[in-house]
Image (cartoon, rainbow, N blue to C red; front, side, top):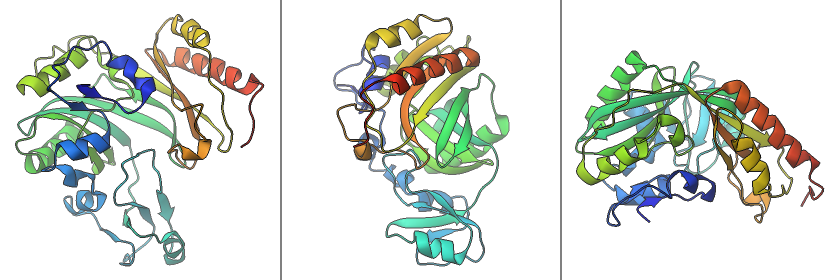
Length: 307
């Protein structure tokens, strides 16, 4: 499988993309880590901080001031697992865990940026803003049509310094213009919102180390998320329900983002909720209405039982 995707609900974006069998394009961190040993240090969040001269250290090395943010040094599952604010030495002591770190608590705009890099040089950018609810949960993401020149200048310099020779996609998460995470892949939650032909251009990038996508029709999109409570064994949703929602105007795709046959506690989820679905759309109101309809189907299901 040339485009490797761990989550079956996202295979819809890649199953019809033509890709040579000898070219591997990762969409998950575990595969990218194995494919790019020279650059895998990017998954070490302590090194990400140090590369920007941000205060950070492993648990056991006390900060000089509080509050700080505590999180795993490595987190290959995402979803904000293990992250929390430590407002005092006592709070950090309570959060103390092997393999975790603290870092400067950043406050400001939280941006997820996909970047196409050719031989270490950024060639294409797309930025997404998340509307956070709290505890690692997002209400929705706005995939911006506009550029962010200051952020691109800062992150572009960082990429040139640290990814020399790399060709491929990179996803960068920033808060207040500082990098908090970097991934050797693109965000696989909303590639359909980047425009027709974008994934074909990605294949060409990995095959020929060039970028030829004509990004002339980009538009703002939205990725609306449905979360439920933890501790509930949610049922599968009938495909007919999803198909009906997909027929609504401005709905691009729908993902049911969990395994109904798997116990809830075996899913990697943020502390604030259990992610049930993602609706990608071109109109926010349409996405919110589709989310409400999906929520009603989940809540009305008769086999909602606590394990």
